[in-house]
Image 1: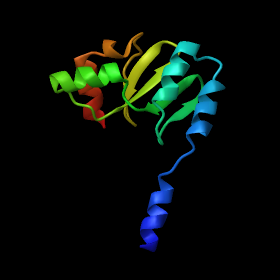
Image 2 (image 1 turned 60 degrees about the horizontal axis):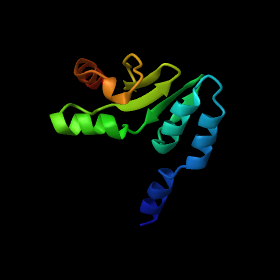
Image 3 (image 1 turned 135 degrees about the vertical axis):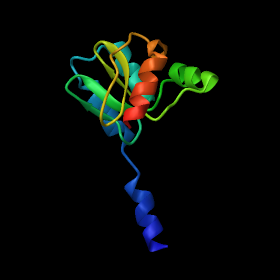
Length: 112
């Protein structure tokens, strides 16, 4: 049981710390920052005007669930909009999250 306690603590993260890093990004527009605050998860990383490792936006998640598209990727945001990514590749940025195409989703999912 001692090991279970350690394992649980290793996945806890300080959400406020990650939100503060997003707030301090100077190149990211305010409307994208506000969306990013809601989608923060433990793998979220904010640096150089972009935020990666966000959970999927509800609009994108709805599109994926309705049509059975793959979802093996994370979401990110930069000054140009929303994108999806894995550790190997990312899509181009789109002004709205549901603007990400099926072709991009399938390709990015295949790289992960």
